[in-house]
Structures are given as structure tokens and as C-alpha cells.
Length: 179
Figure 1 (tube, rainbow, N blue to C red):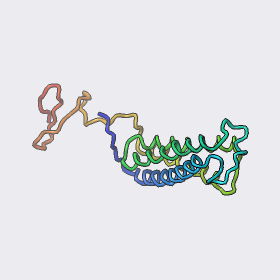
Figure 2 (figure 1 turned 60 degrees about the horizontal axis):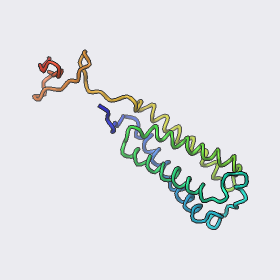
Figure 3 (figure 1 turned 90 degrees about the vertical axis):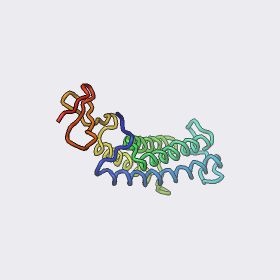
């Protein structure tokens, strides 16, 4: 049986840190992406369209849309899943870190590196931290690919405790109680 909610001891710090970082990332990406979509020629954010020279974009509309959806809505959904203790949240958190790192790498290749304001260095560090938090969390909580198993007998048969609470079990194949 596959359990979707598997609280594992020692993962609360990973989960809370991931949620906080993903929400911070999402808020920035939603705001920045919306500003780029609504002002694709630098009307809202003072970004010259000339920086896009050599890229497949002639305005900031498509990059803003990607920023809004992939790095805005995506991390917000992952944060929600992490908050709900969904078993895939650690791997999805790693995915958020990798996606942010890929976004920044492509941005630096197309637009160039800039530390005025220092958004690129801050988000590069954030990408690494989110990815490492997800990695540590995934290692601590175990692989989400393994299905959790109920208590089993030597024959790997599912066992059910006796209704009266005694130490006898039923192996379901023979329908008899084993002590």
C-alpha cells in the first residue's frame, strides 16, 4: 500500500525551511513575472529590451510568463505539498532548486551576469540551498519510490492484529490466528 502522508522523525526542520524558501521564491517570481508580463518593454521594471539581443525574445513577455508560472506558481505548489507532508515533496524541492539554477544559468548566458542589484547572486545561493535542503530531506525521509508495507509474517503476508488486542495475528491466507 502506498502512503501519501509519511511523517518521518527528524524531517520537520527540512520541511519548514523548504516551505519558507519556496514561498519567498514564489512571491518574488510572481511579482517579477507579473511586472514583466504587464510591462514587457520595461514599462514597470527598468530593464532595457536591448539586453535581450541575441535571445529568441523581442520583449520580456515570454520570460515573464515563464518566471510567473514555473518559478512562481511551481514553488508555491511544492511548498503547499511540503506543508501537507506529501511524500514527493523532498524530490520536488530538489526540482525547484535545479529549476531555479537552470533559469539563472540561462539568464546569465542570455543577459549576462549582474550584481547591481545583487539579485542573481542571491538567487544562485537560494537555488543551491533549496536543492541541498531537498536532498537532505529526501535522504532523511527515505525514497518515495518505496511503498510502505504493513507488518508482515515470515511469508511476507499482510498481518492484522486481533480485535481483542492480544499478540495474535491473522495471516489472511489461512484465516487462522497465530500466536
